[in-house]
Image (cartoon, rainbow, N blue to C red):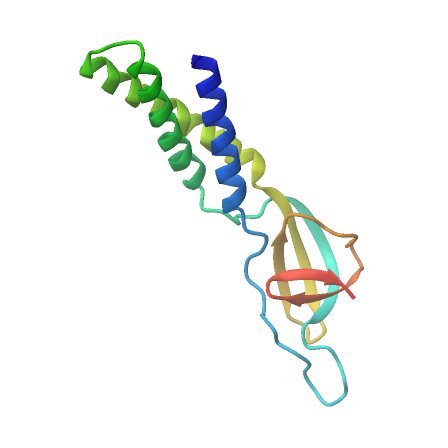
Length: 152
């Protein structure tokens, strides 16, 4: 019974964190086309790709959600085991701490992505953070729109 509730709480926290993920940051929106020469204002060439944290989700989100789920699970487990309010409160607090630790660890693993460095056609350099490359490599010609790089 205890493992079933704990497993359900962990699965719920993973699903909740997955829903919080964002796929981009920064960017130039729908900049459109620039000069009358027909050059693409929001186009450029990938000069470097780094794998790492893209800082797409605030760092406290996993810990907060994990703490809430852990507190609820601890309270529920204690409810069936004791009539003591003090013990239920202790179990709630312990569940919140354990959930926060687990939630933070899950978020840190889920936060991996790619930082794509792009030299734009007008000489600017931008960095786009996203979860997948979709075939983009160093030297690829890309368009940066809504904070997301796509192959041209």
